[in-house]
Picture (cartoon, one colour):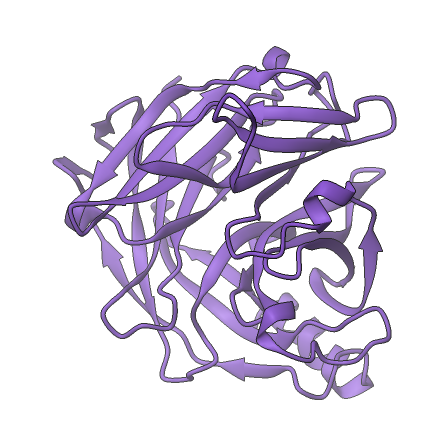
Length: 330
């Protein structure tokens, strides 16, 4: 049992986690091919580092919409379409290959009173990132669609939970009560010109020029921001690189097949009153992908910076929960 698992068990016994948190068994099968690339081969502007397909017999596992790293030793948390935190540890072998998601716990999110979210309309979590204070992870920030809002949840030993702390967002965003509203949320790192600001991007709320509306929440960098619209795809998640460059994951459907793009926006272009248009790093369709909805950046055990891209199976048997990993060429 890892130290993280010991901490989780102790927290459960101490009653610091809701009684409805449950441990689930998740199995993983390796993915060794992406498009025409094998492991460690270049694919478009990235290097494919492999991946896994996740499966669980527990019907609460699935619908994974976004991913963030929450602590040391590759601790990570997904948020799901049904208002759950899905927390565990990314497992790597001695060769630096991702081979599993272990020690998996599922915990329902709660409202500001500490009560379970009352209905599906309030549970649709679509984005998450980690809030740091003095270099330490202290909370996760979650974006919801349908009942559109943003809320923080405290981290205890890398595990999110407890009552929601609502984060103020503009009225125009709160008023978007659809499943195509707030889709992406990410927090700028210290190296960014807008360090500490939270970027919010919508899926289908377009401005008068047809671009995706967004907003920056920050002390000094606050206000409207846009993202250039593209045919077929919409932004579905975002993540910052350590140097402040922004990664935007795009997802769509064409000819009954999922489409995925990953774009990179230079740090200097992520600022209020601009329309961001990123450079295409990766594009895929067909059997190599599924409904790709999450992107996260982390440092692998071997010290390499990695990009994780995950899929949301929508709790459908015919869809897959994929977690693919890529590196940037040096």
